[in-house]
Length: 218
Image 1 (cartoon, rainbow, N blue to C red):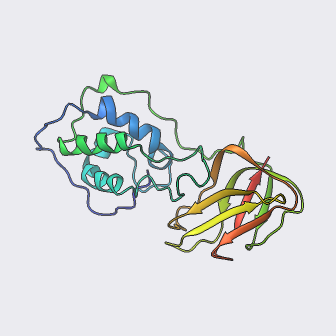
Image 2: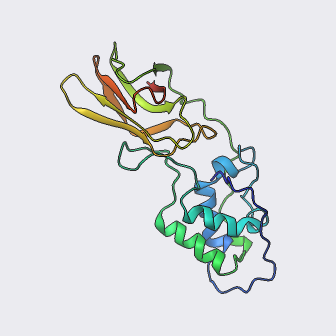
Image 3: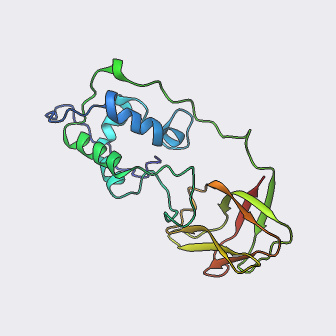
């Protein structure tokens, strides 16, 4: 959950507690699951949020970010490609965070905390070996590709870019639709199942030449 809100954190030491939700029992588990990659120790975010004393001052700002679905950052349109590394919160998780903050953001019993998430580290052991860079719309694959993920190159901030593949038999495969480009948060989007694209597949980017992409393959 890369928090882009650089407003002053809001302390609430004297808030009245009106909720049974606590950091130790419910909220920490959400943060460990969705936020550790950026806000864990060694992550790229400007602050860590893995401990109650770290997260509590930011509670109100975090609530606003998750309610507006700005955090965790994920700009791929759901249903246009199915990705396994989608960190988005479920509606239930958003509601839990909101109600926890509105109820005074209590800590609860530290003995109920789950195991701390692992220290952030870049994954390298399962990195795809082959790469094919797609420069413009209309690129035709000269060899078959079994793609496991797709990584945008130059995408303008706020831009909407859609990329799909047209196989030689005329069928289409939706690959990725970025609704709001964020050059400051580059990422590879990893499909749940590999996408098989035969030789002769044409890559379609809309708007044409709006961005470059890499297909990361086995």
